[in-house]
Image 1: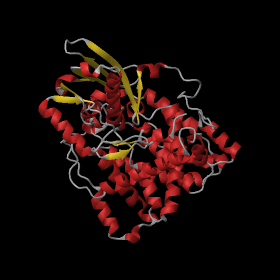
Image 2: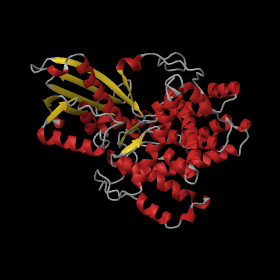
Image 3: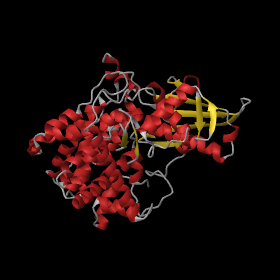
Image 4: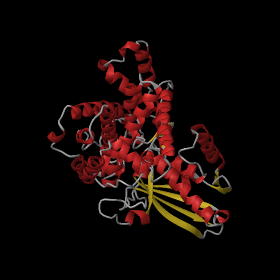
Length: 461
């Protein structure tokens, strides 16, 4: 099993698969050189970005992320301001310090190849790195894949066959499940809600106190991202001249605190979700939930339904929400994909909507079967959603799409609670498989390549 703390990762924007993943890959490659004693002999590094990583790599920050990873920056601890300064130094000096130690000549234009014509068979987000010594002899060459949500895999890992429905990561848990049906069966057998069952599984990864601290840290990072997004004004980078809208909406809502009523639900959810995704578009610190492109949905729903709670109650609510949502995210990750380059935006915003719907239903006292029903409804009405970012930027339609996804998640949870457990005609497993099949059938033009949809029909400014 994977851990829910693998689903929720703190990183920087604008993309988990195109920024966080490539940064981790480049860092892994240089760390391997260092461990093998080859770093001191390295005189040149080349990076070949393949498929979607190349086609939307500039707008998604992949080139910058690759350089940051080579310098040893880690996504979860990177300060955006420090990263910006380091990148400016590389571009002005054409020098780069591998792992912060070994300085080499480095020209981003020559040493990073945007090979969009190469579409890897194993995954559309391919990345090949090579290291050479002073005589031009190759010291190492590795191919990795950024598989969505900040997850990365080597060529060997993607060619390894899973056992049955499960991806074997070597961690044994007390309540193993490879499908929603098995998850619900485990809940029925133990009498535990989904959040408690997942918490018991997390005990196999680390101490209970460390898991809870990790969940609290994720919730705090989500809150901090909303708060930053509510107060940062201006035009988002990239050339589309998209203005931040969340601060103005926040000012209007804050001027009338009594507006925090059900009829104002849309405005509050829109405000919080856009605050997160405007931060993401600006390269700020966000949490993959389960991806950066869909990072605003879960924080928006949590913020709205915890905003008036006492701190202790709010902490417990957030834990229940994130553990439940994390369980749903694990199912999508293991049975399908959360990569926009594989599934389109149904694999990002659709999955986030599904996760948020299940988490909110649990918060409202839903049974495990109703939680699964909420998650199913959340995805069912996002099936076929394309990923067609204008200008290769995570702005249009991504920011508003998160606001819409948050509203859909709340409605999905309410629909599930008003429906008897036995009345569902579509199971969560069936909708996950449908999403997977739809993603496979979808043209690559609509899967994070900016070669179709809005990306070719909207005139860029």
